[in-house]
Length: 308
Ligand SMILES: [Fe+2]
Image (cartoon, rainbow, N blue to C red; front, side, top):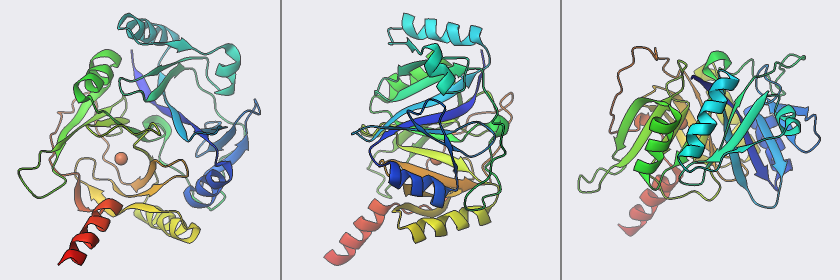
């Protein structure tokens, strides 16, 4: 069985207009009509969509959808998950067609985060054209990007993703977010699919996130593309969650911003590309080599400064 890549995400939102500004004007994604009329689709490459937005009262990241190499792999994974007591729900032919896949099922991780697994994929007839001139996103064999989920029960989530599903270790980190050595670190597992992207999925020992996702990462080819997106974020008044910085483990230069549904979207470039056949997992204790000052850290620093 091979987990080929992160294929697309599904988000439920009551803020379709805000999402239109966010994905179109800031990220640079291309809005297209969905075939079923029940959703809004946005493209970042030649896949018919990478974002599927469905309208709903609650803001909710419904699923990160990962593509498997075959129907046999999909059935085998569904069987394994069901045997382990997870609720596996196959979509019908209409729902599969709306996703441009052959077959898929949905399941939730131990923290309640939504996932889909599918096989079969499609290519759009029309070329990708960004409304703000983004030439391209880094996708292809590396997939859409990566998704990061909170894992309050870290062991249970790690066993689910690594042992049961079959994602592979890239970096098993223990991040010290504060300089005080008596404060314990926060465990993260950065896991790769069967492709060369440093991680297609990560879990962090974080409190539960009701919206269903910590962040989603999209990669652009150059630092200049990242800077341009950061400027579009400022112009659109989208809140920045973290300043520009470079991650220690995947060397990605990136910033984070808050999407209309409340989780973060990371835009980065120059992510490390690995050879999945020979990779030896790392174990870093710092998330970033430089930068990445989080909004909460900024607020804390300002508060402490006022207390002097
Ligand atoms: Fe990330």
